[in-house]
Amino acid sequence: MRRAIYPGSFDPCTNGHLDIIGRAARLFDEVLVAVAPNSRKSPLFDAAERVAMLEENTAAWSNVRVTQMGGLLVEFARRSGAIAIVRGLRAVSDFEFEFQMALMNRKLVADVETIFLMPKEDFVYLSSSIVKEIARLGGDASHFVTPNVYARLRSKFGHPAPEE
Ligand code: ADP
Image (cartoon, rainbow, N blue to C red):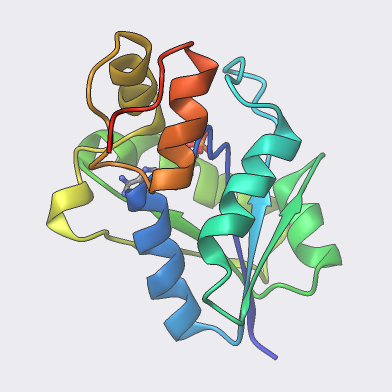
């Protein structure tokens, strides 16, 4: 059983995250999407909501599971029996932080590899923060997230559902 962990804040999950999950699901027997509390950012959605949104959108992949995680990522990976940590790389700007984290994680636990996957070009400019900013200001973020995430975003910011 080759299991990978895909950790992140997923606040909320975007089409970019789902693209990476789909790629990882083809490479590994099981992908565990791990929703992490992020000490650097205060989330818009609580962890249970972030898990629920991911579960709704990954139901079609039989080898994808969603869970919450706490503590050190590498310890969580080891306890879960994962052989790899998956991260998405969008642009050079992601690289420095991801590179530092991957090498530090390898120092902590040598036998869990970090692998980087690149999304479809359309999603390279997408981030949860940008989507939240558009939704907060009442813009149309419907192309960047799935309809159920979009509905939750609109209700979070008190915008009525768009007319059909
Ligand atoms: P974190 O707070 O850990 O960066 P995110 O939810 O922002 O969590 O991202 C989780 C992972 O998904 C990171 O590896 C990030 O680079 C990647 N990611 C985020 N958005 C995209 C996207 N549009 N395309 C590809 N990867 C992405």
